Length: 115
Image (cartoon, rainbow, N blue to C red; front, side, top):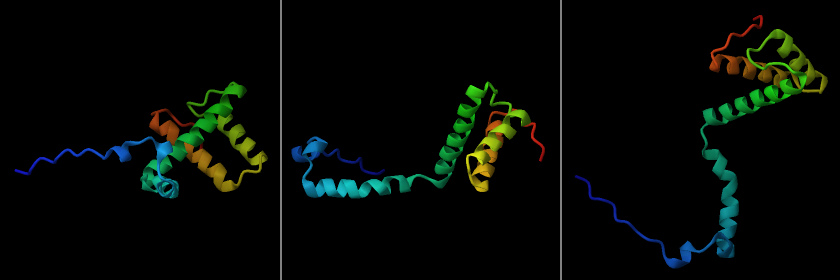
């Protein structure tokens, strides 16, 4: 049977507020910040990006008075056209379409787009 871990308490200096961190420690904390995002899994990053793209589509639909889901050709085509008119690259437009398709699949809604 493994031994239980001892509880340790940090010295009083280590428990001080972040504003009282020594300058060299503050530099280390600042230098470590860019690495924090690197520990997220690639699938998590992709899911966040997919969610952002789907949210952008949904936000675009509201003032047009279009229902974003189920994604109908009469809704998706004007959205993709709006992206093209605003000088988005073809890869960006394709990723937007993929996000809409995957969003419909995730919601188990029919997708009425020609393949």
